[in-house]
Image (cartoon, rainbow, N blue to C red; front, side):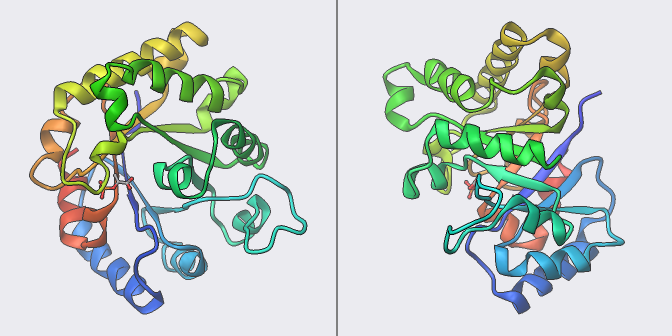
Length: 249
Ligand code: PEP
């Protein structure tokens, strides 16, 4: 059985006090959910959040990581640094990293390797831009992002991978892929993995949808058979709406 996952990407939002307040609010509002819950605070808050969640059923992810083991990379964070404070999950390939920080598929392939080498769980993000969908190239764009960014890994490494399909045109725009559009792409992703690897891997990997998921649309998106949960941006910054989304699983 595939895992259901709801992950909140807090991006560059919330200072330490605000993060701690959001977390305690979330702990009380979350209640029972079938989903595994992950939160991704900014780097400066990772240690405190990891400590605060030691006894809780919420996991912590970093929003990014450098591919090198260590060295002269001013301002960067390594896998070992993350692991040393108890962070076992990392988001890689978010569209904002690709668009604003020039992260290419090749660079992401390196980051994936480093994270897997450190036995971290990777949330690998990808998705087409609006012009790709308008020109009917969305399937080939997604296929290439997968082939060039993650299909080099060994079959045995897929147990450490979560995929997040995030059409760029739906991120932070208030525009969501329809449940049918999400299902169509998730089924395509699974078929592409089955072709490159095998049916077992394709059926076992969790594929999250991301792009303006809110309490009012989460349930119908999550109801689709190939959608295993969501990567949530804006709505995860409010405990009540994040909890409502988590309960929509
Ligand atoms: C995201 O940034 O991964 C995301 C899905 O953002 P939002 O939910 O705000 O569209």
